Length: 356
View (cartoon, rainbow, N blue to C red):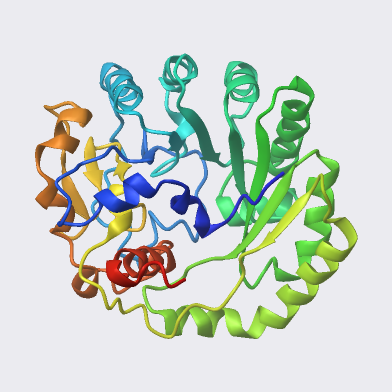
C-alpha cells in the first residue's frame, strides 16, 4: 500500500492547483468535501474540539442541527455531478448518530465518489457496518481509553463501551470487503503510558492502521505545548517500541504526535485549501475547513439552505478570498503546511520553471 498520510496528494491534481488563485477565471469543484450530517453524539469526550470552551472551533454549533434527508441526498447528487473525488462524514457529532446515514451511503455507493467516515465506533454494527465494509474506502475510529473504566471516565459513556467497540471492530473485519479500518488514538497525560498495550490490542482486533495524535487543549500553541511537554518522552518511547514490535506491511502506525508551533500566526492572506476541502455543516452552511466549522464570523463561506451546493460553489469565486488567514486563523490549522506548499508552488516564476 502507498502512503496514506501525505501532503503530496494535492500535487496529483495540477489543474485544480492552477485554478485556485484570483488570476484564474476557473472555478473547479472541490476535490474532497467533509460533511457533518449531525451535531448529535452519544459520547462526551472531554477534549472534543467542537465542545471545548477553550477552543474557537464549534463556537456557534447548535447541538440539535442535522441535515434534512432530502437535502443530504441533493448534496450527494450535486457532489457526484460536480466531479468531487471524495467525501468524509465527520462531526460535529458522530455521523453514525445521523438517522439518514444509511440512505446517504446507499446513494453515494451508486456514484464514483469515494467516501469515508470518522466515528467513535459505538454504532459500527448491523446495516451500517455492512454498507461501509463493502462500499467505503476507509473508516477511522477515535479512541483514548484503554479499558472499560478509563473509557467511561474519558467519554461519560456506559460501562463496557470499550469492550463493545473492540467487538465491533472484530466483527467489522469479519464482514470482509475492502474498507480500510483505522484508529485515531488521541493522547493526553492519562493514556500516554498505555499506548504500546493499546496498539497491540488494536492490531489483534484486526485494525489496519493507528494514527497517534496529541489532544489540542488551547488556541495557543504555547499552552498546548506546555500541556504535552511533560509526556513527550513517554509518548515517543511507547510509540518507538510499538513501531518496532508491531508495524509492518499489514499494520501501519503513523506518528503524528508532536509539539505545536510556538505561534499559529499565518503570513499569507488567502487559503488555497478552502477550495480543495470545504466543509458542509449540519446547519447547512459551507465552511472553509473543519478547523473553522461552526464559526459564523470567521469561517463561513455561505449557506446552502435554500440553494443547491453546485450552484453555490459556482456562483462567486470572490467568496473564496474573503477569509484572511493572517487575521482570523491564528490558531491550530491542519492544512497550514499544505497551504504554504501550494502558495510556493503558485508563486514560482514562470520564466524560470525549467531550471529545476
